[in-house]
Length: 405
Image 1 (cartoon, helix red, strand yellow):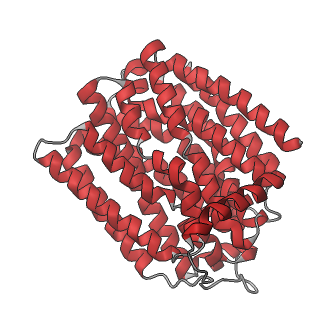
Image 2 (tube, one colour):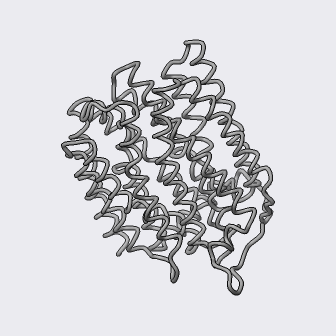
């Protein structure tokens, strides 16, 4: 894969986007991330409208993260051997097919929540490879001197799609319905597939020996746990996905019960945090100087959990959205360094495996989604989110203690 250099008189940003491989991978990531979030909001709105249960919504949304928990580490080990470009394309093609099937079921009136649960499992399998394949390829396309900036732009785009995807999902659901929404999702997944198809990619060849996979995963875990920065990445990732980001699993119920929000307003609520992350991501992408370190990651995670606590108690929808925008400043720092620290600190021959372990930590999110869904049904969505934020802050403190040791 090509790498790049700024050259005399050329800005680093222009040099980055002059690289065709980076542009294709960056655009494909933007498309697939947008469709992922659109899919999640539409499936959540449909399920809540059919069942009137926050727990049912959380079950449907949990399906997308279950494969990450069960197979994240294994996917990282496999990505060290199999062609990462082909693994990425296989996931995009499969998601296009399943989205088309959901559109057909919706058009015929046969769509049920369990169909969306299965669709989420398929999407989760593709998402399991995201860090170990596309994110690693983005960093490799940029080259060692530009890893931090490339990851920042990619994270910024991810924040943009997390903002626009739910808004589009709310609008599409209210205006054109489930069928058209999933038809659009299928078409755009196919577009992402075609973008990656044109990427020139090469990687060091190593045989895939199934009997060695468990040992390779264990070795990667040993490397990560012995390194303070990598240990921090894994710990903070668990805390953020279990206690922080899990609030998205009950957003349709939270918006409807707390603010009597319409589908479009629920989409606006979902867009608050990623909009704040977009602003910070842009600042990180354009900054010069040394790459930020571990302290920024921990501070970002803590700041988000505090603002999530306040947003859950907000008396109005606009104030809750504003607080989530502020919280997004912290999630941008977290998401940038989640990949950046691994790419900069981990040994090259173990990076995909450690990114796979990070994916497994992300996959712990379903535990939080199920918990917040059960709490919301029992005590109401406001108290459920408040409880998760408080426990998350306590968990973050524990991670920092362990990392210091």
